[in-house]
Amino acid sequence: MKHRSVIITGAASGFGEGLARGFAAQGASVLCADMNGRGADEVARSIGGLYGTPAVGIATDVTDESSVETMVARAVDAYGSLDVMISCAGVLMAGGVEDFNKKDFDFVTSVNYTGFFLCAKYAARAMKRQRASGRKELYDIIQINSKSGLSGSKANFAYSGGKFGGIGLVQSFALELAEYGIKVNAICPGNLLDGPLWSDPEKGLFRQYMDAGKVKGARTVDDIRRYYESLVPLGRGCRIEDVVLAAIYLVEQEYETGQALPVTGGQIMLR
Image 1 (cartoon, rainbow, N blue to C red):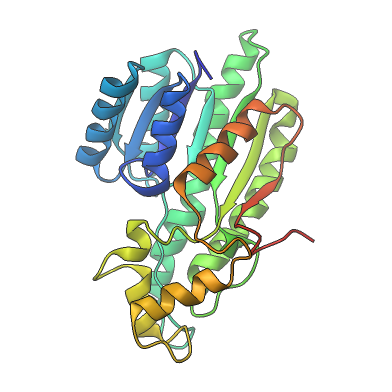
Image 2 (cartoon, rainbow, N blue to C red):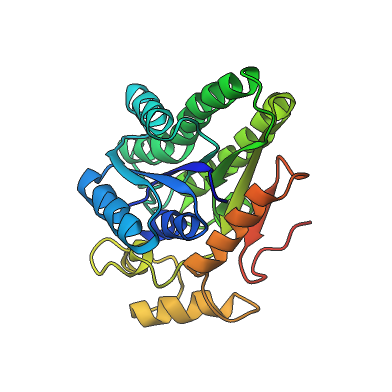
């Protein structure tokens, strides 16, 4: 992984932060991008201090085309190239179909679906230029998708629908970009039950799912957690290090593109 430059969106927390730290630990130069620019800067400074590898933070809105274009240009200016784009920024808002409003639906879709398209668009442009200049190594675009991109999710259709669409983009981009040495894959993690997306006491999924009545009979957030753990054959939620290992594998291998790799402890099995 040494001498590779990597952009990771959503890098101020959760899977994104873990991926930034994991790739830096392997010697990669990392650009940490996030709507929370201060958080991205803090992660980048921490990475530089821990691993001695180059790391830069930048405030980025993945739903804004000019912001994404600037993010990619910053990485190329800082490191001379872009080798890996990991699209990890994402949002989730739970709710039933009759009560969910269009504003929230558009917001979830713009981040999870359109945001990945924009990241892939500008990453591909940079990677194709590098290929045209005579560099023959392979490049990678990876979407951090979800198990909800492989199987529908009750009272969570906006998120699940965007993730299903993301896998369609992955497969289509993979066919289009293979001739330029660009691999495009997705990782579909299970539930990161210990991360802020789930555990935030006010906005986390445990609370959202309680309010939406997603788990029948659940009276507390502990009931919600136990229910989701019971669905996993290996008996636990996904961990950040599970996803880091999957991402490193996808970059290091040379013979897979257009794939959606489940990291779910057996909860979702490919057919």
